[in-house]
Length: 259
Image 1 (cartoon, one colour):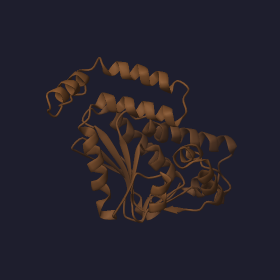
Image 2 (cartoon, one colour):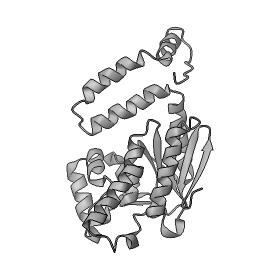
Image 3 (cartoon, one colour):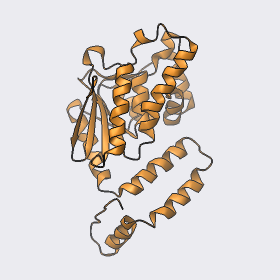
Image 4 (cartoon, rainbow, N blue to C red):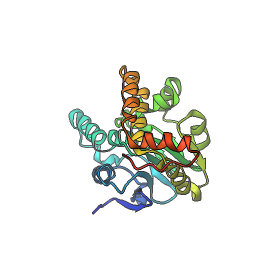
């Protein structure tokens, strides 16, 4: 079904592995197409409750884009390339109503760093390195990197990272707020699944609303506060809200059904 990725579904978690280890899992048109299709499955398959995106091997999550595809492009084609990738993959990840974790193994550079930042949560292996080295090619990040990095690490550090192309290691990335957790390489997927198992026990309709609200907060959406109030109200019309309140009062664990 896919040329460049592998997918597995276990306990409601779809693990998407970019499988080009000989190319450091670099993004090209085929990877973007495959990721787009896999994300459609995440959105539309009711058996999928959450997803993990990772890279094959221990050297790289995604070490950038396939530069050979850039050479023949003009300004219009370059803009179209970026827009298509954002629509098919990056914005689709960020706006997914189901939680998506980036399990970052090794290099996460350029489009790889942008891919990780589009995810809702990032877990990194101790050998992970993050960076936006596009300036070395005479270009800038095009898959949302200038915007998402600024939101995650602040204006000053984003300016420095993007203009110098310097990489940051896993621990510095955690200190900056770029990643949530740093673990040993062998524990990477286990940690991601552990977090998703906690979220899976929560009401999925509320989880989807949280994702939408926090995204609006990160984007400084002027309607963010009003939308929070609206979604808060919508929760009261769900069976899960009644179950959660009843379970709290009855001092038992709630059983949420996504209704």
